[in-house]
Image 1 (cartoon, rainbow, N blue to C red):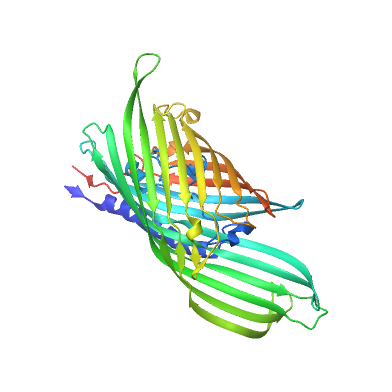
Image 2: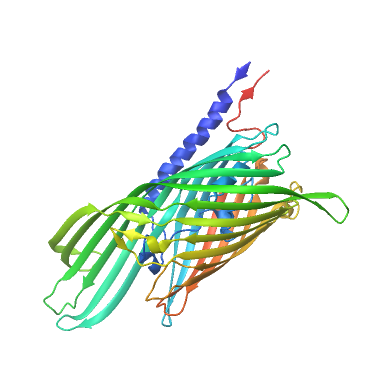
Length: 455
């Protein structure tokens, strides 16, 4: 006699939990401040390289790095390696130190980075090919800045200009992947994948002019709210070849080589802008409106750039997992309301390594922990007074199995230290980001999405 009660209960619980957290995250991400960088004023704001805690420890390297325990958001084709249902939640705390002309300012903020669920569709030893599906919510770009400048103006005295912005764009995604080619021993495998996304969010960009209180002039507050939405596509491929080595004892040791790539074409974001300008008295943080002098609204289309990446990966004896990523983003093509944003094309290179002392050492925690490290170099998209800042990052992290669950559930901790600066920049930035992620998988008593039978 077949019974589906336990299966449906487990499956429905996971899906309901995912939907509830997704809804909560949508409302939270619309309200939370996602970055503190003054350079997020440029273009669409700062774009995260990856929102996964498991990838932060390897400098967000992942185009061809293979993992059966974590969801990979960089290359959709890697999803075929998802061997069991995985629920993922990632959090981030950003610490930012700004250096300008010998003066320093430190800030920090907390944000929800990612929530996703992945599960295999085809995952049977009897079948040559694998397939998997994932969906979730993650940041596409983020903005959060407050820049103040002052100058002496004839007839107005000391005038203060404040530029304040917040908001961001979110990415609700659905990914599917499939082994297009796989031989009988799965020595050679070619996987393809595609991610369809709904991009949505807003930017508030405000300009405030505060004049000397001893003059007859009034303060001016200009508010711009840009709301954007669009459908986006990303495609990827991954070629993997199994390798056979001999260790010091002459025994067989297996590994693999992988080559991955992704491409995301240019897209047009449907935008609308609402502009309001009014004079005020009192403090800008609590203005008392004197007179509204302008209100307008209309379309503001945004042409977002294409991007592509190439990655190389190598695994050895289930202990070593190494990857190299090369990613280019064509930000010079970004246009907002038909006007070029005057940005540079960006290029990023990263290297990541993950080491597990003994993957078979059951309950010996220190020997089954995944130790991660990485390095990255990036020519950023920014064009600041003709200068293009560089960004250098070092990262480290841990993947800690949750032994008590008798599953492959894992707590991921990732840290990265990033320096963004260069000649001609008025402000240099030092980031320290701390990521904490939770990857939940079913234990031996609860096989999600599997049919149960009773004799």
